[in-house]
Length: 218
Image (cartoon, rainbow, N blue to C red; front, side, top):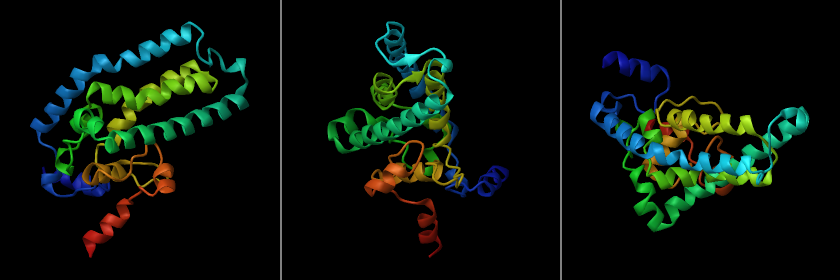
């Protein structure tokens, strides 16, 4: 345990105390909740692929169909749209009380550093997890999107959500890393963003981990 805490301190973890390490019981519960929701998480990608294959979206098979420069432009627009959409979806899951009570609260039982782990990143009510992925699908109807890139970004979602729940703050501005997201789990009213801090910065919901560290020192 001492060695683990030393590793955590050396990597900028939000909590350096021994009791900031989640228990095996807490992590097993997170794995159970995530695995129970996993089959439902597959429903949205299955639906989106059906719509893509029927030609209802603006997806294309090859980058050469649009060219590399337009592809990079569309990818940038896609990421901006997803950032905007997930920010507001996440925020409304907090602000609309029934949505929070019956959906998002399942995820927010992990509200302290000693209950957060990468496994908590997928431990959602299945409808909550689907709602937060909906902007990825809506984007397909608005922005020309390379199909393989879309699938890769959906896979990245799982990796990213695990990463931002590990309490290890990477301090890479303007990335919405684990330090920011840990604050979200402890205050409930800040840092709703997804990949970056931009939406929180623009809308006044940003709280910086370095400010929290300064308060602890004082």
